[in-house]
Length: 167
Image (tube, rainbow, N blue to C red; front, side):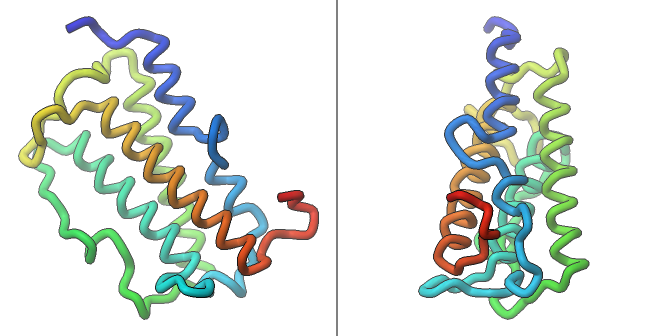
């Protein structure tokens, strides 16, 4: 197998950052009103904070998966979502956002590291055949894109975009 090319590494980093074909995380959460952290949009069983916390928990699990040789699988769906009645205050919202940023930066650093072979199998106690660092990085990007898009659309539904949003 050939080592990861600079082009592949660069493209993986672009996709993790978002903004090519989907809204970046920072744009989706910009100027989000604190009064709506716990709002459940119509016909949706979870709040805006629940979506962000789900993004955080999922990305953290994948980050742990690729960097922890003693990784143990967490339980779906309970460990990936907050409890339905759990709510966030401003401190909890800010902590979720901080951790999303921090974990994305950690994953980006691993992908950007020239010594990281993106095509090598992930080797840990819970790894599965065919799982590579590239696959896991793209999985984070795809999962984030899906839920960031959902978050943005639900902002439109609930009229929580600022007047100058232009969307």
